[in-house]
Image (cartoon, one colour):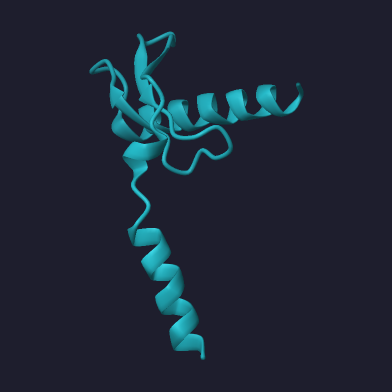
Length: 80
């Protein structure tokens, strides 16, 4: 039974494409320069990532900036 449940979940996830949830790119100003983020959906931040950043910011830092922006937007939208 566990195998069938795992297979059903995997099939559902495979059929789901991140592209279906993409927002328009969002530019987040920082002290080191603007970071362009690809945010996904309106109720999660797991896939949010940086797609363009200045050379002064590492990939990890840029992705964190985007996740923080997605989290901020999520918190703002849930207060309405």
